[in-house]
Length: 142
Image (cartoon, rainbow, N blue to C red; front, side, top):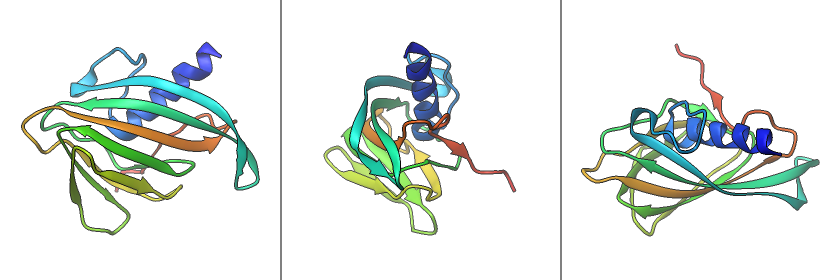
């Protein structure tokens, strides 16, 4: 259980913060990830047993993540600051505190950035297959 939780925290930190974090209390490259919940859910995702994982991600000003994908849909809420966000070929949006976003499972999350002057805090839920080893799939560099 603890190993699985650490894997989930690491995966989410890569995806939403774009930075590698072995523990949720580290702050690599100005990003911190705090695991809030990881729960098995009754619904299935593409016919597979599913889990919902919630994290709070803090991103320092000027920090950005690498393009990546998730094995299931993600829902987010900006708690504080500004979050520059874009998926697939859609134009980037700057989301402010109180705004939400949705990422379909498998889409390319190509922009994940704090372009503001104060820290950004995001609450995110990712739905994923229970057996998923990685919640973040880095996009190959071209």
